[in-house]
Amino acid sequence: MAGILDLFRLDGKVAIVTGSNRGLGQAMAVALAQAGADIVGATQSAASPDTEAAIKAAGRRYVHVQADLSSLEPVPRIVDAAVRELGGVDILVNNAGIIRRCDAIDFSEADWDAVMDLNLKSLFFLSQAVARRFLEQGRGGKIVNIASLLSFQGGIRVPSYTAAKGGVKGLTMALANEWAKHGITVNGIAPGYMVTDNTAMLRADEKRSADILARIPAGRWGEPSDLAGAVVFLASAASGYMNGHTMAVDGGWLGR
Ligand code: NAD
Image 1 (cartoon, protein in one colour):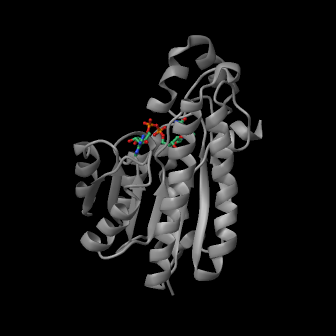
Image 2 (cartoon, rainbow, N blue to C red):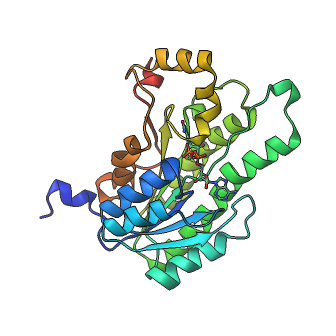
C-alpha cells in the first residue's frame, strides 16, 4: 500500500502552468516539478531562464509556449504542446492574471474587459480544452484555479478583479459539479497578500502597505513559495476527494 507521502508524488505527470515566468506561477511550477511533474509553461513573454533552470535542476522537463491569454487564440496550442512534447496532460494550474486599479466611479470598459478576458474567460476556455483532453485520456485530471481573497471580499478600487475572482470561485464549483464523475477535481487557491508584481503598487503606498500588514495575523506578507504545499496537494492524489473548494493561503487574513 502506498504511504501517505507517496500520495503527494507527481512522478510521470505533466502540468500546464499559465504565467510560469515569475511570481506565484513560477513558484508553483517549480514546486510541481520538485514533486515530480514535467511542466508546460504558458506566458505572454519569452521563456524565463530562472523558471527553466529551477525545473531542470529538479530533474524535470520544461516546455515553454508563448501565449498571450488575453485572447483564446493560444488555448489549443498550449494543449497541443503538452500532448506533442510531453505525451499528455494531467494537471492544469490557471495562474495567469492581471489587476487594474481605479475608483469604480471612473473605471473604464477597457480595464473591465482586460481583466475579465484574462482572469476569467481564458481560465474557463483553457479548463474546457484541458478537460476535453482529460476525457480522451480517460484517467481523470486535476485543475487548480488561482482565485484571491477578493473571491470572498469586495476589495477597494479593483471592481473588475473582484468580479473576475468571484467568478473563478464560482466556476471552480460549477466545473467540479460537472466533471467530478470523470475523476477530475477542480479546486482553487486564494492567496493572501503576496510579494509579487501584482501587489507592487500596494506595497509602494506606505499607508496601505502598513494597514494591510497590521491586519495579517501571520505578521508578514506571503512569499510565492508559501503556495508550494497547497498547489502540490491540490495537484496530487492526496486531494482526491476534495472538489469545488477554494482554500485560502493567507497568513490568517480571512479568519480575522
Ligand atoms: P504577477 O504579476 O507577477 O504574475 C502575473 C502572471 O500572469 C505573470 O506570470 C504573467 O506572465 C502572466 N500574464 C499576465 N498577462 C498575461 C497574458 N496576457 N497572457 C498570459 N499570461 C499573462 O503576479 P502574481 O501575484 O504572481 O499573480 C499570479 C496570480 O495570482 C494572478 O492570477 C493573481 O491575480 C493571483 N493573486 C495574486 C495575489 C498577490 O498578492 N500577489 C493575491 C491573490 C491572487
